[in-house]
Amino acid sequence: MSVALLDLKRQFARVENDVRLQIERVLREQSFILGPVVQEFEAAVAAHAGVEHAIGVASGTDALLLALRALDLQPGDEVVTTPFTFFATAGTIHNAGGRAVFVDIDPVTFNLDPARLEAAITPRTRAIVPVHLFGLMSGMERVLEIARRRGVFVLEDSAQSIGAREKVGGEWKNSGQLGDATAFSFFPSKNLGAFGDGGMVVTPDAAFADRIRRLRTHGGVKMYHHDEVGLNSRLDALQAAVLLAKLPHLDGWSAARREHAAWYHARFEALEAAGHLVRPRVPETSESVYNQYTLRVNGRDRLRQALHDQGIGCAVYYPKPLHLQPCFHYLGYGEGDFPRAERASAQVLSIPVYPELEADERERVARAVERFYGGAA
Ligand SMILES: *Cc1c(COP(=O)(O)O)cnc(C)c1O
Image (cartoon, rainbow, N blue to C red; front, top):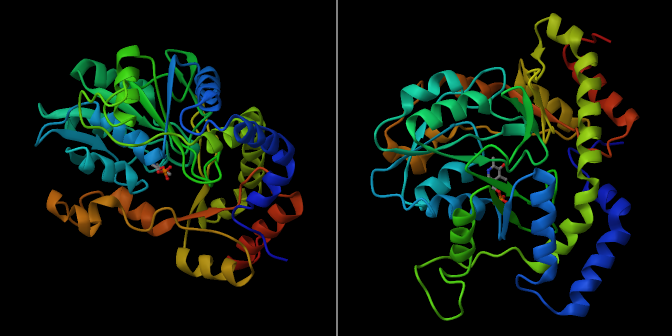
């Protein structure tokens, strides 16, 4: 019996009725572009995150792109981010006309290291894009302190972290409440997944929200009047219907992911003590939503193969840091520039942590890892 890294069929079985009801509503209304369901879902996400404005767009990538487009980057303008992330983070910086500047990661959290952030800021820096990787936020207290002092915009890449929280100034804040703007993704494998692509920008700033709304409809809110050239990037009403049905389950799903993570953490203590692997750590000031449960392991590629051979789903996020991608050769980075990100790329392995994972499946995953290292169990 195999164990999938993610099994969306199980989730669908639990939400099917609610999803069908919302989809039928769209079919009855025949309102497919920015209709009432999209507005309702935008309001629901804004309320869930505790932020004023939410703008539904076609994907998480477009959420990043539109937010960056709204900054009117000029040639040579710099945007600071992490090299250890999904491609879209830096791809959108490029496509918005900016120059990506990378900062190495904190080896414990896998996120951009705030201690290295300030040194990367220059007079050309327009924005910082902290990526809350695997469901864990980026140490926003320090990121915000530096950004405010240096007058730089903060765009949270929260594609993997909707519902995550972090303490700032002693108070719990949700992802989306801290940045000048935040991008969410509803790609099917994200914690709140659509039946296709979808994304959202949230922001506390009314003027910024208006600008994003304009940019998502060809640069004009009034039909056939274009103040600027924008994109066609709207959250599809059918996707909004699916997401509206799923959103009430999100907090429960996040709690289930945390429960699996806590179980793995206890189970893998001995393997870590023996030096075979390092478990993911969550600072006390943070609450992860575990889009991935990602270990650092010895013999990563052999372990991955061993798990695959036993039908156990696992994956490497991400095998090549962005500063080494051929398309970013022009940025002038090379091997050795961000050693922590490079080491992470060589060592990480994500194992199943999705909410509907069964206890006996978790057990099989753990046993397979233990067997690989010579039977710690
Ligand atoms: C998924 C993801 C994106 C892009 O979202 P899409 O909806 O797939 O376009 C951006 N950044 C990160 C960190 C992601 O994981």
